[in-house]
Length: 173
Image (cartoon, rainbow, N blue to C red; front, side, top):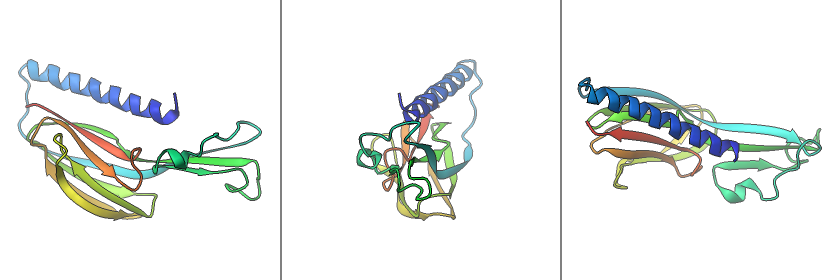
């Protein structure tokens, strides 16, 4: 299993554990009132490098698998070290957040890497709840939405999908 898939599975399992804890609290009569969640998120590129004498480069160019992946072949990654090769993936961190139905999600995002990011938020029904907009490296952006329906809301960067995605799991109140 690739590192990216392990990270995705770990994030989903962590989110599921948090969701179960919230549901347990709800069943004990500890339900909270509608609230605003301020979430600080970073958009970044995660990179890794090695040399061809330690590990052969991938047989398929990761850029051909997804717009969210990057690859620099031996000789391209570092002209001073012709054996060196590099891979990259764009992500939002955190990539998984749990809130309750009716809550307001206020997202403050800072973009570290990538010149441009076309982003939007869709609701559980696939409807756009935050319109498409462009985000740029080195800037901070805010957006907010009310989690009206239970289910998964997705923050997507079309420039680097599917790896640059954040999920907001909305639990019933």
